[in-house]
Length: 322
Image 1 (cartoon, helix red, strand yellow):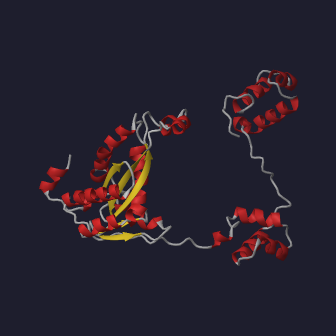
Image 2 (image 1 turned 180 degrees about the vertical axis):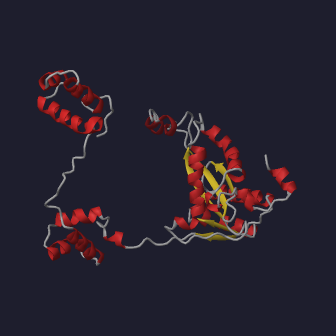
Image 3 (image 1 turned 60 degrees about the horizontal axis):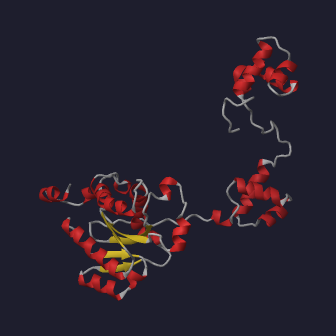
């Protein structure tokens, strides 16, 4: 029972009540009147107190000590065995001569209510390229602009609907992210849209950033968004001598490193601080990006920092590290 310990007739109140009977000589009726209960209830707690002490005043499980009508273990195992042979619940009930509700209850207890529970989960193929730059994963995350601390921090949505209705809502902005498959070094920037123009600008900026680290980008992987399917983006990849790979439809796990990076960025940057405006959030992105690349241990690479997987010379370290 989820109640606080100082409430009436919880362990503390019960102890005071029974001690009035055991220590101060009051009758059960007097104690019952004082604590707004019945003499029978007082007698129950006095009996438990004398038998088990203070520990006897705690609530007990309401489960009965015996269940004479409980479904035998052999029957429960037979239900599971038939289920694993792909029998429906109605077929199992008919085969074993038990009610369908019994079959349903036991299958629910054993996690077999759905036939899909019998199928092994497909193993996700995990891969990692051997050297930096072989593939960079690119994706986009849509974020709402704001001109006051957002509801994710304050919990206050007052006025949001009015802004959308009267056209005064700040609108949206788009975080274009890139992450290297081998090192997990990332590059992100915020654009006003997710058009081909912004996608191409981010591609050029990302390639230049990796080049500054001594990394040559060979391939880029994206989803099938319209900006990435455009002829202009294909031309930009060709001009940069980069092979463009697109994921299969409805398989976001193929681009999972970018998807996972976005989750981390939202948790540790976008929604981690009570920014007063979205401009402040945008200005903070380079600081967080630097921490992610240079200082934050990454679980996917044995708690190393992403930058440690890129062979930088001493001169580059002095020039690039803040």
